[in-house]
Length: 209
Image (cartoon, rainbow, N blue to C red; front, side, top):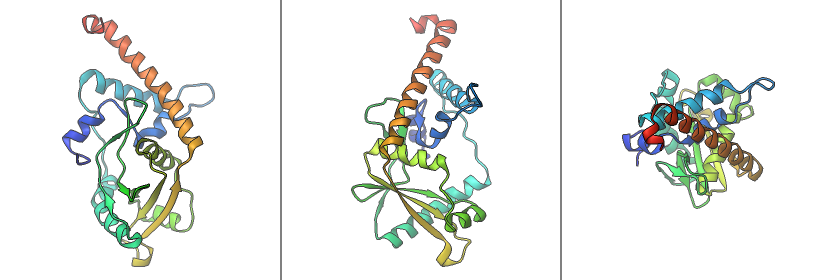
């Protein structure tokens, strides 16, 4: 299925997804629970209980990224001599309601994740700045779901001079990080199931039974 299609949104309904892994892993201050984590759990509970996908937020930067991604994919294929196979959604092999939507499959072992940030961020990446942790988490989830062993992180900005438009950095599969991700996701999903159960028991006892 095509990413962004009604079928794609339906397939993601109520699931933890790779792009939101940083919300699942978010920590509160001290012993306080994370508000970001709680908000995401509430969003997924609402999707499961209502059967409707949460309204997605977009802004000019996100629209820019969507617009530039096809050009970035073509540039990546040209520079690497890889063909990128676009896919929809891939469920985790052992944890239900957990999925990823990579930007593409590469060869037999790889993935590609494309970001089209603002020029200031792209420049910092060109100069060696660390990739944001949320993107590391996203890529490790994608590898966990697909079984792939590496993911090429691509930063692309067509506003820059030609030789500075694309940065490609290979990120290898990290078993330790994936283990932590899977542990925290399983806990999150258990708590989400319990939240939905409590709401059904209180407000829809016929369904809960």
